[in-house]
Structures are given as C-alpha cells and as structure tokens.
Image 1 (cartoon, rainbow, N blue to C red):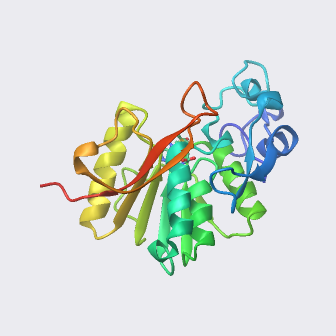
Image 2 (cartoon, rainbow, N blue to C red):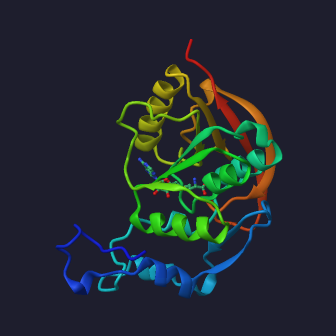
Length: 232
Ligand SMILES: C[S@@+](CC[C@H](N)C(=O)[O-])C[C@H]1O[C@@H](n2cnc3c(N)ncnc32)[C@H](O)[C@@H]1O
C-alpha cells in the first residue's frame, strides 16, 4: 500500500511518502517479548523516526509515530485475548486507536469472527496492514475518527492506551459510554495514564509489560485490562 500526503489525487509528487517502504527499510520485524505469538514491525535506535517530523523530508508533518511501538495498554489486551480466547472467539471486535494493530491482531488470532481496526494516523494504517499480513490475519482497516459516530455494529470494543491526552480521553470516554449503553462490551488496556476514567473501570487482569510511553522504555511495569462499567 502506498499512501499520499494530502488529499488523494491533488498532492504534488514532491510530497509523496511511501510509508510501507519506510517501515520495511527502517524497522525490524520480530516477535514481541510480552506477546511472542505476535510479530510486529517495531522501531529501533537506527530507525530514524525523526525523519517523519523533519521539515523538507518526505514524511514531514506526520503525527508522532505511535504506531512504531506496541504500547503497554495494547500489550496487556493482546495478552488477555490470547490467554482467554473465549473473550473474543466468534465475536465482532473493534480495535479503537489501533496504532500497530497489535490488539486487533491478537483478537483475530484468538478467534474473533471479524476485526475492525480504526486509526486517524494514515501511516498507522499502513503499519496495521503490514503487521496483519505478517501475522496471517484479516483485519478491516478504517482510517476515520468514529468517536463522534453512533455505536458501531460490533460485540466488543477494545481500547489500548488512549488515555494520554485530556481532550482525546474525554471524547473516547463519552463514545465508550454510548457503546456500552448500546450493549457493546468495552475492554480497556492501560498502564495508568493520567486521563484514565478510573471511576468507571473494574480491573480484570494485570500483567507486567514494557511501557513505550515512558522515558525508560525497556523497563516492565504493571498494566491492567479493565472493563467499563455503566455510570451510576
Ligand atoms: C498510544 S497509541 C496506542 C496504539 C495501540 N492501541 C497500542 O496499544 O499499541 C494511540 C493511538 O490512537 C490513535 N488515535 C488517536 N485518536 C484517535 C481517534 N480519534 N480514532 C482512532 N485512533 C486515534 C493514535 O494515532 C495512536 O496511534
């Protein structure tokens, strides 16, 4: 897949950015230490992801490449689905804010009947596609913000590590509440980010996993799978 910056058909050739070529050339694909059943393209010190932000470079203006790492919240959800496949088996699962696609890939591997991954970063869409192929699973990839939409036609909504920004957390929490009211189960994986809606969560499982959202990234720390409870 080749993505073009700007509106399809109107971007000048100079602004073309081949995210697939970038990922294949600059990232390593390997099993994850916390979830060895899954292989992902992951950035390493030589990846030079800074090129994505540098003015004048092909990928300039891209959002921070959150898709280049598995986040702690996504890792625990993936671990949970693979350890307890009955959670997703035969069910339609939506991975909101999919990043690398880790959570959706785990759901597909654990037997979900269909998986949708949503992302607003167009480079992430390429990453999800590559990673799904690498793991031999089919995922429907949606490059849209669905948090203002009515609840989607799925059985389970999985959210890995989306509570790091106050405005985003508020929008996502409201959307998840509407999904829950519509009968959709909502599971959240999170290491305790600042804007996690703790009052409405019940912990289901905890694992120690690396956290790419911290400065000391190699360090493992507890991260939790929560279920969203109805508001009282
Ligand atoms: C911290 S990353 C987590 C990625 C992945 N879930 C994981 O755990 O590895 C959060 C992701 O949410 C995406 N995102 C932010 N707002 C979004 C929205 N409204 N809809 C879909 N994705 C969104 C970002 O682009 C980013 O890739």
